Amino acid sequence: MFKKVLIANRGEIAVRIIRTLREMGISPVVAYSQADINSLPLRLADKTVCIGPASASQSYLNTDAIIAAAEITGADAIHPGYGFLSENADFAQACSDSGITFIGPSAETILKLGDKAGARRMAVQAGIPVTPGTDVCVTPENYELEAAKTGFPLMIKATAGGGGKGIRVVRDMASLKNELQIASAEAMSAFGNSDVYFEKYLENPRHIEMQFVRDSKGNTVTFPERDCSIQRRHQKLIEETPSSAVSEQLRNRLSRAAMKLADTAGYVGAGTVEFLLDREGGFWFMEVNTRLQVEHPVTEAVTGTDLVREQILAAAGEPLSIPAGSLAPHGHAIEFRINAEDPEEDFRPGAGIIQNLFLPGGPGVRTDTHLYTGYSLPVFYDSLIAKLIVHAADRGQAVNRAARALRELEITGIKTTVPFHMSIIQDSDFRSGHTHTGFAEAFIAGIKKNKKQDLTNN
Image 1 (cartoon, helix red, strand yellow):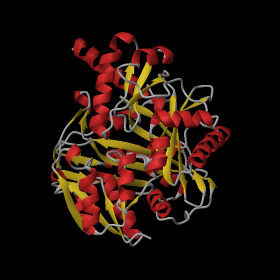
Image 2 (cartoon, helix red, strand yellow):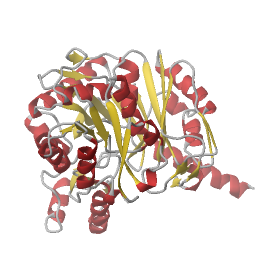
Image 3 (cartoon, one colour):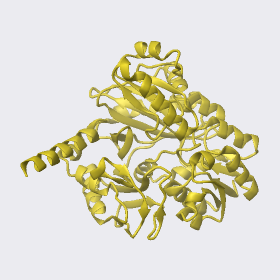
Image 4 (cartoon, rainbow, N blue to C red):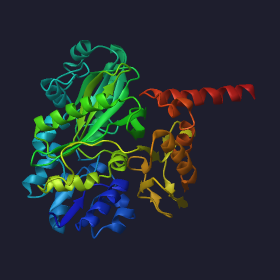
């Protein structure tokens, strides 16, 4: 087992990883940028190493600096968290070349599955239905031909993507070139890779994903599905498990599909297979995320599994601590992503000093965050500042528990999305489980319309 692990990430996920490392008796080391010098992960780590300026390209995306930090501190392994270099095959290979274990799948596996276009080809070979789209990366020379084959509306997606970055919906050829340039630039900024591909855009499906973990002995575990349908601009806002739209029979089919992909790829580590689900129960493969997901806590809540621990065991060549097969859900869990954004100003990101912080507690309530009173939130990174997770015996109780916990949660000094979450969980369609990928956008449009009418009447 590893003695020392370097965390090449920041924010709440760095705190989350540190906690599991501590429980496993492994010394945590944190690599940080100059902008994060006062962050909570640095307070909790045994050692810290500055890897560069605030710009992600010069710090959290700087492979040489991160490898050097691991070597200087004597780290046995590197945990990439999510985002940044977590799905970068070149980074995984650089770790291997330096004799440092990458806590994630091998570079070869990331190339197979982390590359979204390549993963689609593998899904087809495995007999899993996929949405129509390109089998090659889109270039300035072939984009018109590939768009014509895919059909409109279509989505431009980053091959190394995640977190909604590098995604654009295009409805006609006239706007395609400009949107393609924007998506490629965003992908390069977020992942250091500008490659994109096309995928047919389906109107208002469910977004369902299957978490799995596989060890080097070939043992694969699949977990209950997560419903991530409530999104804004392809960025997930609320996730839950199990899905109200998935029967036990469908869950078994999705589980078998995820397991088959993991086994076919010879995967070692934690990963997630993402699907689109229509109203008739048909599903289509979208992509594989070859890393830990932001929404992993809801899976932990309904299964009692520490997914970070299982990641580390798999990377160390150890067997998983849970038996192979498919786990059933116990109760219902919901996660709310709390962002430093102002819902009143079209979710404009912000920063500032945390003046007061009160985190909710009580049965079935968990909050993952890196905030503390007096912390100065930097402006350089993703706006996610906390995750509120609730767990109860069934969905109705979980929603009521969430309403109570959101009411208790207090973060002052900055604008947050807490008021938005409090509004959305009062919606009758949300409470009845009638959601889809267009739900949040329609909900926001309805709020704007009502406010405009109120102003007109006044």
